[in-house]
Structure formats: C-alpha cells, structure tokens
Length: 451
Image 1 (tube, one colour):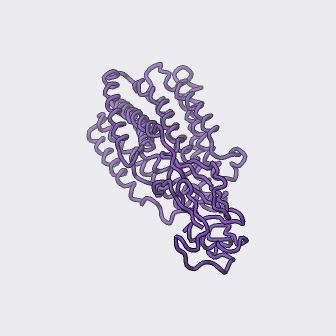
Image 2 (cartoon, rainbow, N blue to C red; image 1 turned 45 degrees about the vertical axis):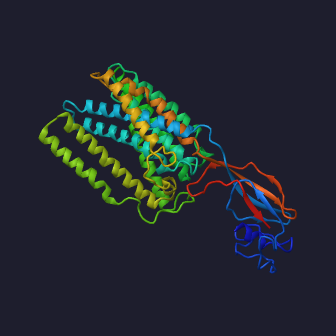
Image 3 (cartoon, rainbow, N blue to C red; image 1 turned 180 degrees about the horizontal axis):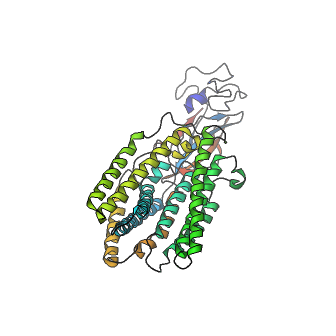
C-alpha cells in the first residue's frame, strides 16, 4: 500500500496526499496524470530503507513524505511478569487464609446476620481472586490509563478491607486496615486518570464514577476504624460504622443514578458504543441461586454444623457474584461509559508470557508452600492469621505495579520524514513507547520505501 500510494504521487510537486485515503478521504488524488505501469527498474524515482516496520498510510507534502514505523525494544527483565507471578502467589495464599478464617467463624451457631456477614466476606475474597486471575483480561489494562486505575481501586479496597476482618481480641488489625484504606484514598486521588476531576463531577459520568471509587476507599477505612473503636468506645464505633454504611449505600445509589442518567442521555457521553446485546445471559444467576437454596435446606436439616454454615456462606457469595456480574453486564449493554470500561473480555488467566501458563503454575506452587507453612504455625489460633494480614500490603503494591507497567515486548513508535525530491531520511522523531498489539506481526528491521 505504501509503494502504490507513493507511485501515484509522481508528477506535480503540488499534488499532495495529506491524510488517510487522501485529502478528502475519497481515495483519489487531484493529479489526473500518473504512472499506470511500473517495475523495480521502471517509473521509480528513488528507494530508501527505513528502520522498523509499519503499515500506515503515507502523508505526502510538497517537500516531504511522512511515515510511521515501529521498532521493537529489548526487554532486560520481565518486571511485569515477575510482579504478576508474585501477586498470584501472595494472592492465592491470602485467599486460602481468608477462606480458612471464614470456615473457622462458621463453626458454632451463627445467626442469619452473622451468616450474611460471612457471605459478604466470601464475596470480597472472590472479588480479589477474580481480579487477580482475570482482571487484566477483563478490564484490559493496556487500552487506557483509567482501566488499570479502576482495577487498582477495586483490588486495593477489597484486599485492605479484608485485612481488618475476624480480628483476635485486642487486635490492631482493624486499625491498621482503616489507616491503610485512608492512605490508599490519597493514592487513588493522586493517581486519578482524569484531569479536572473535582470540577467536572456534577455533569460528567466519568468523574462521578472515579470520585465514587475514591470515596468507597475512605468509607471502608472509616468502617474498620469504627470496628476497632467499638470495644472501648461503643458510641464512637457505632457512629463511624453508621456513617460508613450510610455512605456506602449512598455511593451505590449515586452510581445507579449516574448510570441511569447516561442511559437516558442526561449526563455527558463518552466515545463508546453500547453493546448490541448483554454480554451475559440472565440465567447465569441460576446456578448460584440453586446452590444457595440447596445449601440453606441442607443447613436446616443438618443444623448449625461448620460444613453446612460454610456451604451457605459460599453459595450465597457465588449467587451474589453472578448477580453482580449479570447486572454489570446489563449496565454495559445500556450505558456507554460502562461499555468503555468493560474492555474486551478474554477468559485467560494472568499473567501470561508467550501464551504459556508457567507463571500461574509457579504462583500456585508458591502459594501452596506458603499456605502449608502458615497453617502449621497458626493452627488453633482465634481470628484470621496475622501472617495473612501481612500479605495485604505487598499484594496491593504488586498488583498496582503490575497494572501500571506496560505489556512487554515494547515497541518504540516513530515518525519518519523523507525528503521527497532526493529520497533520504531527514529526521525520525522519538514518539510513543507502548506494548505491541495482539495482531501486530514481528518487527522486521528492513522495510523498503519506494517512490
């Protein structure tokens, strides 16, 4: 395409090709006289080899020819894969310890409120596991800066909040979790991908979503601080927890109103086209609902046994997870901004290097080893093991670094200017550095351009 387009430009120097498909995007030039036949030795003005490879339409002006090209950059250390592997290892270990804490708390005779709390904890654990394994592929981190920020926000809130759950007596875990979430609120605010976030929020749906996620981190921090203060200062603890729960409910309602406002074309739109149909059918909620009904019936027959209570908590969490997934999919079908955030779902575990699952297998192996060592040390202790809590901070840091690092191998994209009359490269810009796309072929270091 480059050769044919440039050959069509031979003739008058004033005849230019200034955009994709020509000046008026009509696929023809203003010059009516041009070569109809050519060969490697006939009707050729000059040849030049440019570094890298590219498939863009050329821009031809009176004096220059402009092309884009890409050159593969060497990857010294696969930092993204290393961080992802460690995140998978720590995350699976964190999930195992969290699940063991839920199983421990399900013993005895928990009432419906306590079972609902256990189901909520299981839902957060499933959210951490889902984001850890499928987060990059579902949210599509490399497409825009707001996507990894969204993944960081959800993963950090879930993980840090879980560190304050099931504390032993006189434990400072809720205090540390609350302070960590308040600090994480500042991190999310500083890393917010949208400039002018605070000024645009009343009318812009993106700013509403971003500010809501920042507020959720702060509210989760207040919830943990209230839990820490409750034994010694009951009134202060109840006040903080009441404010936190009211704020979380208000944030949920605010998100629903923002989604409904954009679906009704009331709020500012984004450059995304809603899906033609919901990405998930309504019946995906049925397996979780049936499992919850079966577990509830089994618990009534078996009594308050630990396996029966654990089955109710897990099945309720699965039902809620599928319900949230179906609801989010329905919103993505109707709300352009959620369609924009949805990305391109690929049900592939992450991290992956070269299509191989070695990093995931390594993470599972490390998690099993760490979990085995941890269980031998904390067996019989009340509350969630302290060792699992210690994993939360490095886990969030690793996930954040993994989210923000570009996908290797990297490609340096450049703009090359060629003198139209003599056929030599006048300059090559230092343009963007970005991940190589899924459909871009291997970079070839010799790409001839002919005029």
